[in-house]
Amino acid sequence: GAGVSQSPRYKVAKRGQDVALRCDPISGHVSLFWYQQALGQGPEFLTYFQNEAQLDKSGLPSDRFFAERPEGSVSTLKIQRTQQEDSAVYLCASSLDSQGDQPQHFGDGTRLSIL
Amino acid sequence: SQQGEEDPQALSIQEGENATMNCSYKTSINNLQWYRQNSGRGLVHLILIRSNEREKHSGRLRVTLDTSKKSSSLLITASRAADTASYFCATDGGTSYGKLTFGQGTILTVHP
Figure (cartoon, one colour):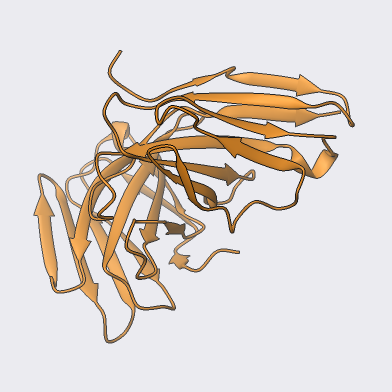
């Protein structure tokens, strides 16, 4: 399909395990964003990539969170030593350019549950 | 933390009625966007209004922006059951690359 694809759709992990969440943006989109959405809340910004460069990681909650986009396309969000408060939906979005006046196209998210 | 405040938090109406949702924000912006989210799905972009615009229309949607009051409203006319969803406003906080800050959303239920 032509949309943003995220995998897995659901992930259950035990506290302390590491997890990796994948995002395939729309082909050719320069900007890629990760957001975290708690139940009943709006999404909260985590990090931003322009092509392969991570230009803003101010929203990452701790140094256990790490994101990469090595070839400027697919991105991975990794969470190390997961904790219960990491349980949330993680949303990826891409937009055509880096000018900030384009709509963001969202994937359906990965619902992460930490037991 | 959420920048925006949306009201009402929940809105229940009958098909054919109009639905109005309001959003307030705190910082300067380049643009404000509205998104819709169906349960268990990602967000779908509805409309973008730039800071120098006051009103914008798209189909049954009408968005207004008052930068002096730091507020926006979304009007959905002649609502349908398929409009049932959560609606979020999002601002870019004046960033050059469009980092969005979302409100808490309004849950709209349209009864057939």
